[in-house]
Length: 191
Image 1 (cartoon, one colour):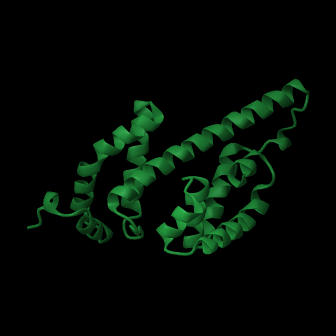
Image 2 (cartoon, one colour; image 1 turned 180 degrees about the horizontal axis):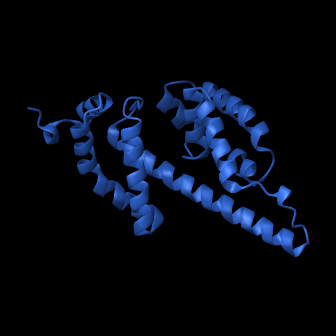
Image 3 (cartoon, helix red, strand yellow; image 1 turned 180 degrees about the vertical axis):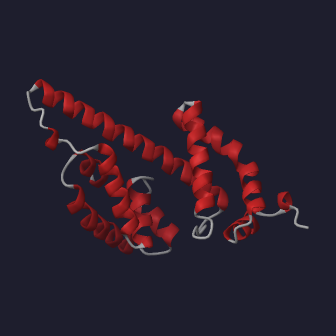
């Protein structure tokens, strides 16, 4: 009989990849409280921190056979919390930006709904476009634009040269930019 609380993180991730729900449970028990504290420090909101951690673990289970832990499990989990927080912040910035643009347009008499793209559709479109990128290119893009890693850090994480990272990011931007236009979101993502 396997004693899960005695296993290393690497052993747990291998079992998780095979669909072992008890290994998932041990990962949850081992990290959920720590990740909640980290998320709370980022958000200063208990409900939001709880949502971030729950979404992380749901995603971890849903993608258990596909997830590659290039670094440690701990680093992966903390990076995921940070990524989810930054995604939330970006979503709030987009929403606030569109609200400000809408109010300004109303004040100026420009109330054409065609001038405003629904933020959820725009975010979903960008997410689909990123998911359609080759895996290494998508990871480099996410690390650069949403996790704010430097090109040097991305190169080390992906085990490629900095020039390759620059090329991956350039190609990602070329593929995504035509589909999102020159609106607020494209300014946020491609600055």
